[in-house]
Length: 189
View 1 (tube, rainbow, N blue to C red):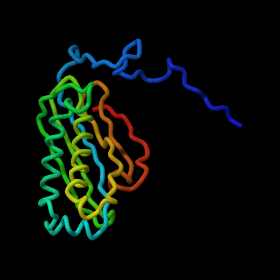
View 2: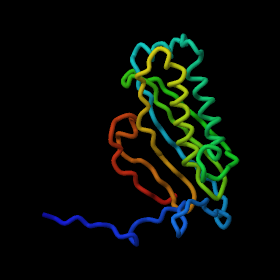
View 3: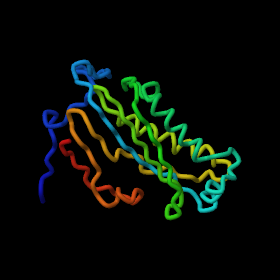
View 4: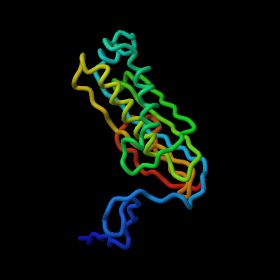
């Protein structure tokens, strides 16, 4: 039987928001150059076909589900530093939120892209945009279906900065929604 290798603390990557004594702290990015950085995140909201049809027809009790959710996601990206304690406040250059109704789920697939020129990345902003978009869809339809499920919120791609290009590379991610994304490979930009 093969013996499992246990990583020592010297082999583990360092957590950037933890100080030497274990206290939480904000990372100092003052020495890092401001470069263009982009992050893309995705997730989905799974519901019944009847609820999805209600969204598509525009007859949800609270109004335009997709339009409201899109605006909520954009607003959330801009407020990420107010929600996640150790995130840097950033002047975002661009935020896009796409919501695609999908009969196969059934439900909606959500994708957010965030760009900034800054010494720090926007992964948290993209993930926050997707999360709040999904939550808003739930809020808009909960009166007709409480069993809605928010699923698979994850980082799809990150570009810029010292760590280079991160991209989820397998077929499951390309179709957004299949379980198991496989390997995400770092690459240089």
